[in-house]
Structure formats: structure tokens, C-alpha cells
Length: 310
Image (cartoon, rainbow, N blue to C red; front, side, top):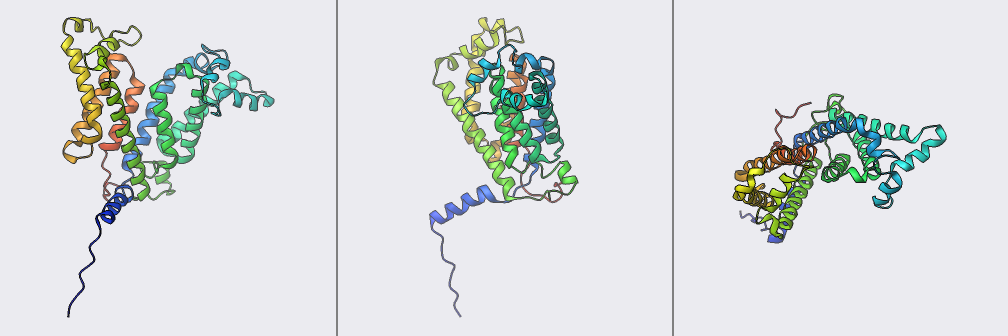
């Protein structure tokens, strides 16, 4: 009796199958849960820091008035003036509108932190974050763009499938899923593209090759947190810092995928942002970027029954 050997798959078919497994093989929801908790915690800390200056940053007569700030926002993006107009017939003032939007934002972040109705909490947090940002464009910077991206990811990725109140309540199973794998892959690929683009852009200018970029950054009165004037007599330190930054960012996309170099490159990236926080005081930005890399690469994603928890 003879048996027919299985037909050999074509290279194209093998490639397509590998690509399908890459984005859809069931993955643990733990990395996305760490992403959710980390982002919510950082943004809550940031909210606490700005709570005392709320009307100065976002008020209609703040440092930059709505009539100016909202002209800088992209057309069609929700803004506080729209909400104020909708609530005015109910007797809510513009000041009350700002405070209400901020309270909704903080409440939604709290729900996201504990994983209570995670998708709904993410939707409210994202919408109010966009609204506050559109009316306070003069006070926003890189951290706000990354926070907006992160909250949007929380809208559709299964970030509440474990380590959450939703898991405790039985609203989600907490099991490995294709959705968790897809969400993780999107986050990983996004980070690779962002760091590679940033590194290439830096390397295209002389300031990142001769050390001037680091030196000027740590000398700025509005950013400098340490007395680093001694760099003027040791310029090689600034040059080394610039080149180390370029190596970390440009090498990120290639070095975080292999298991042998993944942890080392992720830790190097985290160290880069920790250095930015210490030297320049950009704590919120650095914390968000640390959360992104740590959750994407350092939290195990392979399914293990024993590790899946509530």
C-alpha cells in the first residue's frame, strides 16, 4: 500500500501562513493589561499635577484663550467650546464645563486603571482627552500625542481581559486570544516605526552627530534640572550621549525582535527615557514611553495557564 506524500506548500503560501500566525496566534492579555494600567497611572499622575492650573491651561480665558487655542486644533476635532455651548441651556458655565470635562477624564482614567468597563472607560478618557487637548493646544507636547494614541488603542484592544475588575466580574474570560495578539503586534510595530523614524531624522542633522543637540537641551533654562555646565569642558560626553541615542533609536526596530537582544534593547530604551526625565524634567513623556516599551516587550505574551489571573 502506498501513501501520497503531502503536497509541498509554495514559498508564497508559507509566507502568508507565517504572516497570519504573526498577527493572530492567541496571545496572553497580560502585556495589554500592563499597557492599560501603566498608561492610566501615568495620566492620572499628570492630571493631579495640573489640577491646580486647570483654568489657566484649558479655560476660555486662560493663558491662551479658546478663540486662539481652538484655531490651532484640526478642523472637526471636538473641543470644550462645543461642550460649553451644549451645556449652556442647562445653566452650566464655561468654568463648570472645564471642570466637568476634567472630572469625567479623571473618572474614566480611574475606571481604566482598575479595568472596570474598560472599553467604555477608554472611550470616555479618549474623548475628553481629545477635547481638553483641542482647547489647550498651547500647553500640549509629545506626551499628549502619545497619550492620545495609547487611549485610542485601549478603545479596541482587549486591555481589560486580565488584571481587571471586568475579569473579576466575569465579563471577560481572560483567556489568550487572537485579538490580544493583534493588539500587541500593532503596538510593537508602531513603536518600531516611531523610533526608527525618529532616529533617522536625528541622524540627518549635524546637531545629533557633533553632540550639540544634547548639550543645548540640558542647558535650556526651562528644561535643565541638573547643573551640567561641565559638559563644556568635556564635549565628548555630549557626543557620546547623542550617538548612544541614535544607536538605541535606529537599532530599536531590528534589535527588539530577536529574543537574545530584546530585553537588553528594551532596558536601554527605558534607560534613555529615564535619563531624559532626570536631566530635563519631562517626567510624563518619559513615563509614557517607558510604559509603552516595557509592556510591549518585557511582559510575557505567550499563553501560560498558570500565569493567567484575574
